[in-house]
Length: 152
Image (cartoon, rainbow, N blue to C red; front, side):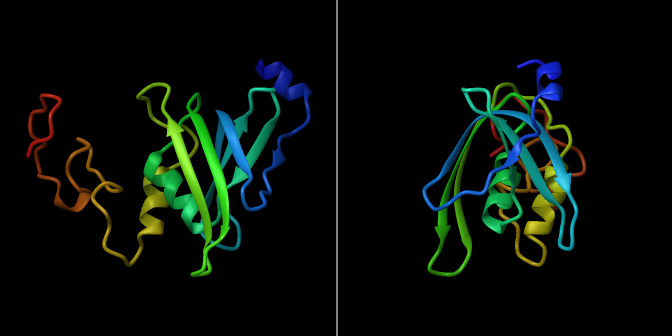
């Protein structure tokens, strides 16, 4: 769908899932919304039939999964809403198939990940340093030369 088609068409509807519902398609827009709580990502996905849905990922699990997987425009995203867990949180399963290894525009994933881990010990997979191998807090002052392999 062209940008002109998107401008002339209806605005994407918010995805309001019921347990078991899925959202699958190509990421066409990334944004951040700030409300009464911490900022959260909005991911607009175009399904194969051309319809667009905007996922307001304000629930902790969905927001954390997006921060961990860092979808970008052009990536394929699959989300399944699992409903409320026995522990009381809203559960999601999120899969991202990255189209290219580029940076995301419109969303500061590091900030969202930091907020999600605020006050908790961060998982090293979620807080990789600039070289992708070192946790941000443990990153050496000078990154090691990379050969495409982990430094350990």
